[in-house]
Length: 401
Image 1 (cartoon, rainbow, N blue to C red):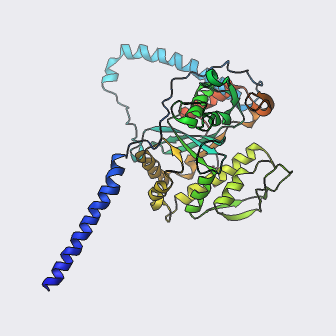
Image 2 (tube, one colour):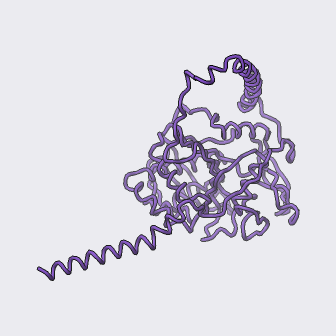
Image 3 (spheres, helix red, strand yellow):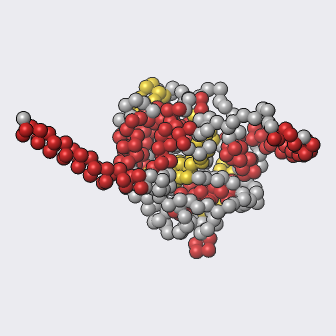
C-alpha cells in the first residue's frame, strides 16, 4: 500500500513537472508575445489623396450611380455645415441641456475586446513558392471590421487600376504602374522599396496616396499557403448555380479545369484553380467566384468541427503567411466570427459602370499593357464612405448564401 502511494505521488510529481515545463516552453512565450505583431507594422504617413494624380482617366459613364452618390455627398456637406451653425447658437443659449442631457444613450461596447473598427488590407499573391520574395497581388481586398454592430464589409479593388506608386522614383525612376505592381515593386526580391511593412507597406501607401485609404493592418497569403490552409480545414463546400469552364482557350491559357453546376467539395488545389479562372469571362465574374470561395471558407471556419481548432491552425501557418496582426488581435477576429449574421457579411466592389478598358505604357516591362480607366474622384468618394461604414447599402440578399 505504501509503495502504491509512493508510485502515485511520483507520477503526480512527474505530471506537475511536465505541466510546468509545458507552461515555461509554450505558454510563457505566447503570453510574452501576445500583443506583439507577427510582422513589421505599416507605420503609414498621413496622405491626402491628390485629385490630380496621373490623368483624370475617363469621364463618368452615363448616369452611373456613383455620380449620384457624389452629388448627394455634396448636398449633405452643405446641410451639415448649416446644421452645425444652428446647433452652436442653441448650445450657447441653453447650456443647461448640455449639463443634464435627457436623451443621451450609451455607445455599445465593441465585441471581443476589439477596437470599434479595424481596416485590414488582405492580399493574395500569385506565386506557389514557399516564400514571398516576389509576386504580384492577384487579389486585393479592403476589409472593414466593425466590432460594435458586429459587421464585416469587404471591398474588392481592381488590380489593373493605373496608379501613382510612391517612394521608389528616386532610385528606379518608376512613378506609375498597375495597382498590383505596387506590391511587386515592394517585394524583397525586387529590392525597390525598403520602408515599413515591405511589399504590403508599399501597397498600403499606394492606396493611401491615390484613394485616401487608411489601412490599420495587413494580411498576405500566397497560392501555396492558401492551398495548404484549405486542405488543413478538410476542404470547403459550395454550390455552383451554373457550369464554370476553366479549360484552356489558347496555348497561353493555363488549364484550371471544368466545374459543372451543382454541389462541390473542393480540396485546396480545386479551390485555388476555381478562384483563378479569368480567361473565359470577365474580371468581375472572377471576383464573384473568389467571393464564393471566401464565403465557403467562412462557413467552414465557423463549423463546430473546425472553430475550436482555429488557434492551432493559426499557429501552424504562422510562418507561412505575412501579417502585422498580433496573436491578441487575431484572437479578437476569431472571437467575432460566430457573432456575425449572414446579413452582416457584405462583399462589394468598385461599380463596373465607372471602369473602362484602356492601355498604358509600362516602364518596367517596356510595353503597353491593359488597364482600367476611371474617374478617380468617384472612387475616392466611395472609399471615403466605405471607411465611414455608410457604403455599400445593406443588400436585399446576403452576400454569402
